[in-house]
Length: 610
Ligand code: G6P
Image 1 (cartoon, rainbow, N blue to C red):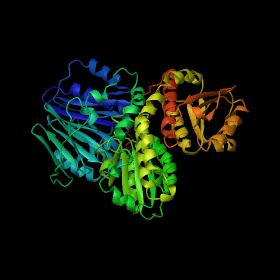
Image 2: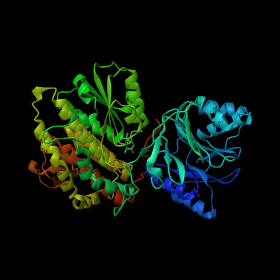
Image 3: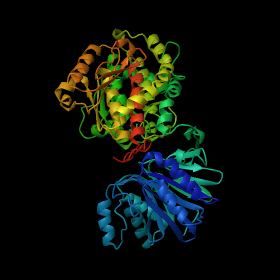
Image 4: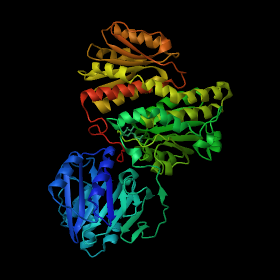
């Protein structure tokens, strides 16, 4: 979703801004723009709808551009279509330029009031009210910083801002309320960005702004204050990211790279978290022991792919004797809850910045839920900072919009948690040492499953002319079918639906014909016989099935049934393994369809609006 990069430097900031925008692309956007103070008192602003290449074209057409202060933005349209006029930065009175990530909820009232006060609007965006509001206060005699403070106080919503004044080269004001904003401290300059990846080519030293912070970046350094002007102290940190870790290497897409990194990602997530026979529960935080002992039930909250990881965890946790509810984060906040006693709220998020998940966590706290645990891939993210217990998934940076390695490592984290929770209920008689052995074998099993790549590439051809697909599975693999269908629709735009196989005859069977491929996963578990019947129900109606089956199931290919063997693994880790062929299938279908795999249309990696 929208991304911000700004720079005050001792050399031309144009290359820094363009590089930053490139690195922000993964978040999802549909237009972009930049403003540079190229001479005192004057902005050069360039904006373009569409991909970044369009902005680069506009930049090239403008000849030499040179300035030491600038802000830039990738916009994911919310208020107004992705046109040049709606793209950021927005400028008021040729003096103030502003970029925003987030939403101003009371923009309609403010627009009416500002119009009555004589302000003119050039765009349909909510952002333009902020820049006009600041200018109105300045026109009435308030200085730049005070005008920003007064304006922010009248805004509702969650946002991050970068603001320039044409008469003040060398100065950028950043504001954080809700949406993430980071300050980078480099040798040649100071930077402002939505995430560290945007400025990784300049510096690894950064400060995470807290909600309510206003940073005043200038040539002398910077100062962070709150809305009332009191100075705030924030520690600088060094990021683990390197420019190399963000490189695509020999892969065609980040998604392909990230699928193939999964063996290593799983191994990194396990490292230091298990002994030969035990999960070290301190990996969930120093207070984990005390909190887990009190925990009587679990509420999982997440969105998208992370929500599917939560659904898998319900099976593991309840098998371990721990009652567990899973809910889509944006739905959790839509109603009242009877608050269960001693409930641990678990939020799952790759980015740690998904606003729906953050809002749901806040709401759970207000409702009196006892404790919180975040399972997340991004250190210093809002979710991590707002949670009592934290488990970092160590998947490494994930750039492809469609989550793959972050999902697999979330499953690993949740498996570890269910092993710990199983200790509370001796009747489940789970042998922790056996579970650990299965996890230790997991990276190798992931690697060998990835060898199915070329087989799946061939199977994907069957989807070349298809518009729809059904995914079927039972039990703990039903969420894996949901995830397989989500991957396929996200990146190949093939309409895909997943059903619990038992539901087939209650509706979706009506859709089955030769043009509706049916994909299923068949692990060797207690549900297998019932699943085999469901497979026959599809065949009997002329449906064509592609079944990824555990090699011990003795399912074999026949007319309208193509069986692809997956190496046999213990049922506890089977959902992790069966995810992989479905990821590869979606990837290869998208390759055939020629879609923009890493940046699918209309989608965003980091969803920072509700
Ligand atoms: C977006 C992304 C998905 C992701 C979801 C939740 O929709 O496109 O890939 O699963 O957000 O994101 P999170 O960062 O909270 O896991």
